[in-house]
Length: 333
Image 1 (tube, rainbow, N blue to C red):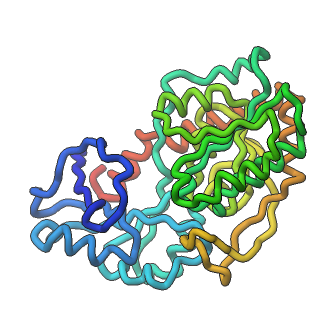
Image 2 (image 1 turned 180 degrees about the vertical axis):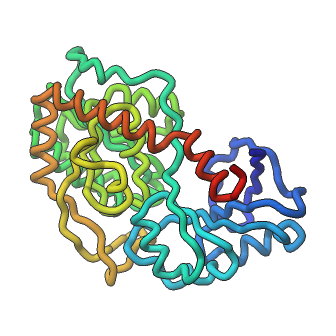
């Protein structure tokens, strides 16, 4: 299928995260077709105004939306009359969007993820490096939602200052919440086995981090999908993650370690998810710490979970399967 792009970043006053991203420009494509609108509900009318009547006319408008709390904010209703249907990557997000969608159909399509060029070496269970846990987050996506301090505390509770283990915390966009770095350092308490990486690194660098990881830990409070969980599974890495929200579609006791939680009011000092009338999850740090100790002590369990995760994720996140599903939904098959 031919695919084109139209960049509305500046028109909607957003920051350009990927200024060098290349695509075939679609602003000249008039007539029939499909527009996949990657714009949040409140901005849909403005986005369509920027696209223009000539381009939008006679096109099927598909909103590609995701939300990380159980209900979608009321102002997202502004976009619903302008779209024909909604696509989203998880059942959790679909249920949330169902609170505003009215008669618009909602389809769940997990994100397609390309498998790594080479399978990481942790499946060989090398003893040549410390047992390594990995946390990856984008602070601009809400520090409180990603909740890395819980993962750091779980690691510290499990291993203390043991130099035969290490935790790597890779984060980006610290400028969006200046307190974040200090909060994470406070949680680490100066531990010699906790390393923070704040530098921007390319995809090869991220692949290298995954390749050195024995376990991924994500004690998030909410995920619309759970990309780091999915990427870890695809690489055959055991994942310890909160058993709530989008990742519950694919992380099970057979493919990883779901962590129990309690629901608490959603408070977000960055304001994106400041909805105290709604709830998100507070993961059980004690259980996460025990899971870390168990996985460290049991290489066979790491291998079993990793292989099961990779098998499941390879099938579920296949780009080929994603393309086939799109053709089906668009009646192009």
